[in-house]
Image (cartoon, rainbow, N blue to C red; front, side, top):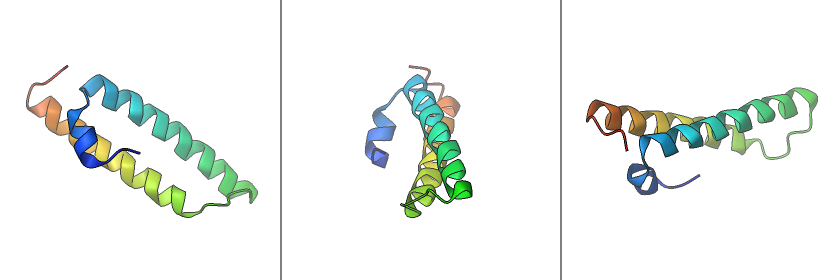
Length: 68
């Protein structure tokens, strides 16, 4: 995923789209882990943290009243 500076330049809609994409990836990673097919176990942690970063930035933008 992008760096924090890139996230801050995104609009709230773009952040929501990226959040949806990461949640789908997280879902797929959980299935891979459960079936024993997961090769890159560190990706689970990266995705989880990226989701938290996006939520934090989006919440800040919504609190500031920025919708675009």
